Length: 210
Image 1: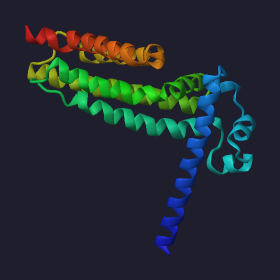
Image 2 (image 1 turned 30 degrees about the vertical axis):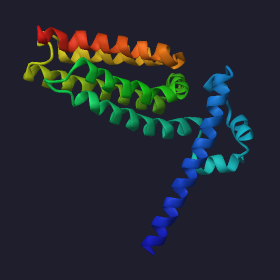
Image 3 (image 1 turned 90 degrees about the horizontal axis):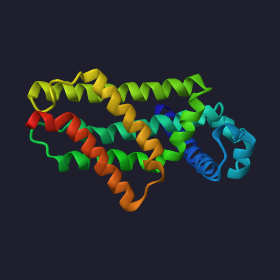
Image 4 (image 1 turned 45 degrees about the vertical axis):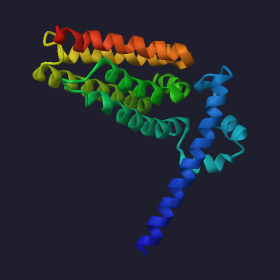
């Protein structure tokens, strides 16, 4: 009996994931066509997706729940990408930092349209807002921990206040990803990553190497 239950749960999770991807594909298309997330109704969404309204409500409470389900997954993906940065040590080079930040940026970039929708939804949906705030708090905490460890080991500028520096760099990067990376491609994206690397390197690491 337990194995049957687990199989049933696994099947439901798979169907929910499939429904989510199908619906989010429609959301992205509508957003790219100029609509805002707040303008997209469940009725419009399921019609575009060729799905029944009842099927939508089997898996999601509302539009915010759909967005929250996606956001939790992408947050985990971005946090995993950031581990390359947090792992840098005293022997790290600027090229290694660039490689770590390249991974963060290119993990985020495919999701910029839905991230923008998430920020829009956070303005009126308290549960979405809590997820966004939790993500940013976690990102700031991760960088703060890295800065403090680097200061103790002597490879991060000891004069920097860890909490405030982490907050500035994290929020700066979030706005840059949203406003600059979202529309950048090819060589322009690479230049943005170069600039981001230079800012972080010269803020955290270069002064400690003089």
